[in-house]
Image (cartoon, rainbow, N blue to C red):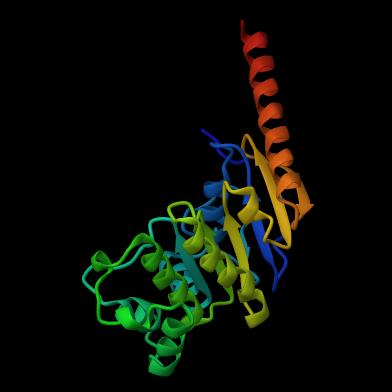
Length: 234
């Protein structure tokens, strides 16, 4: 079954782009394909000029470890490693030297320096998400993919994470974030609205109400299309 249909999307470099849409609209699948974590079954997906659809597993993993950072709702931390070691992990996986000063600076900036020797199971959800963000801040990837990065957080912790995501483009990173929260999406420079696996529109960020209205319109269009399909088959 096809999940995405006729996607033609450019994510501007050095900007923050949010992807929104009704549940089941293909938001997360789009992000997984765009990042190379899922292989698209057709077309092309270019990351920094490289088509990852035809890239071998080894080269794809190398590209992700050297150029890409991930922030997911589930945090994706290694339970057996300390906070500091989790932040350093992308360096080690790519065989690069770990600059301890950069790791310490990232922990300090995210307010988790006091937890450096703790393991993730000793932290709150907000603290674990800050570790995931610190990992990105320390490694300074060219592209950051974030899938519902504030979905499991309280309001205060979510604001800290969004503040840092919004600041990353000024530090040289391009951010692509999937979210169901119109207030989070409005932090982005550009908002991509999806529905039924298609891009329904692209609007500027800044206005949560406009984002919410666009999602509701996509949801209405999806419902209408489904009703028309059911009518045609009956």
